[in-house]
Length: 139
Image 1 (cartoon, rainbow, N blue to C red):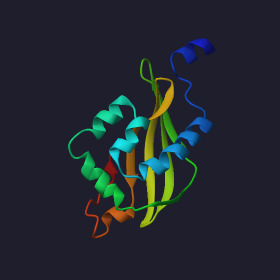
Image 2: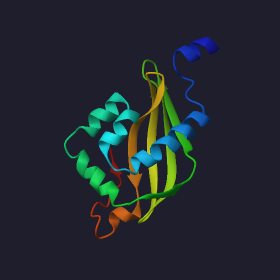
Image 3: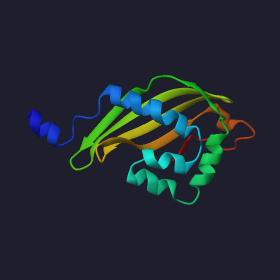
Image 4: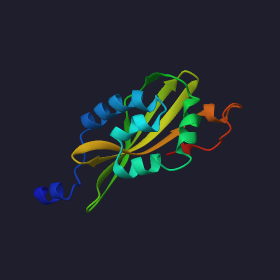
């Protein structure tokens, strides 16, 4: 049974793998450039980055300013399906130059490596007068 579960991809990355990935990608996210994120993204994530309007989203995100610090990732869920592998949902509390933010990431293994499959950033900074969007922004 263990071999079957492993072969189906149900067993996901270790918490150490997730933490290492987040430590590596957080400074890259804070560059606020889609092309900087592309090497860390799944094919599907990178297709989304290439869509019209995503550059504007990065402009909105950039209103947070420089990354000051962040907490270790907290795994909040996971899902698995045959042929799709395991997706892990993590949250990272961070402090940026202009205020706090909560980064919600979906991670997935692709080509044997952990990759960013989804990114949602929530912050009160986005509802300040200079940052018009009032809803969480998502890539």
